[in-house]
Length: 150
Image 1 (cartoon, rainbow, N blue to C red):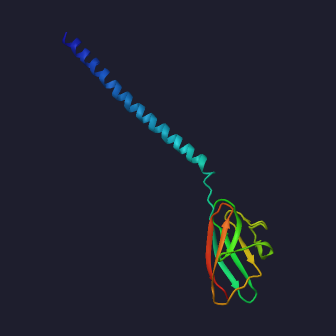
Image 2 (tube, one colour):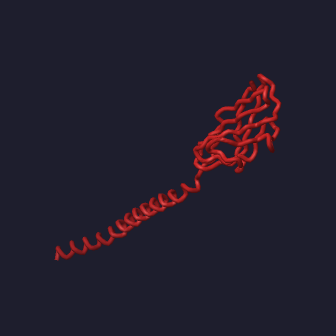
Image 3 (cartoon, rainbow, N blue to C red):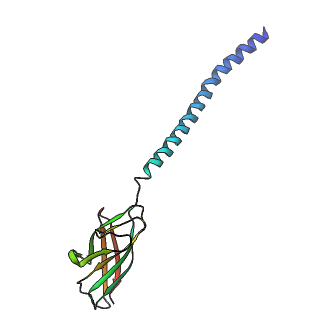
């Protein structure tokens, strides 16, 4: 008789323990699935997370010739399209603006991790004066550089 009571008590305790164990297992499975989904979504989004990063490495402005050469480097993960170039607040357009270099097209597109040059001609520079050069990309990002004309 004593054995039967102990068995019933053990069965009663086993029932009380079962929901706790089930809850722990459910929480563990939920956490594991959410980690897997987060990793999967992170893998999908890397293609959409391309960055546009253009750096102006050097600007050589020549007062004698009225020209300036802007050397640029695309350190981002996507191609960059140069849409506007400014000296101060003056936008340079037309034949005064020439794109070149191994990784830059005539339309102003510089490939990812590429380098190029932007040549400005027909400008008026004063030797020893400081000029602000600004490049605006097709996405509207501004990149500026200050140089002294020689």
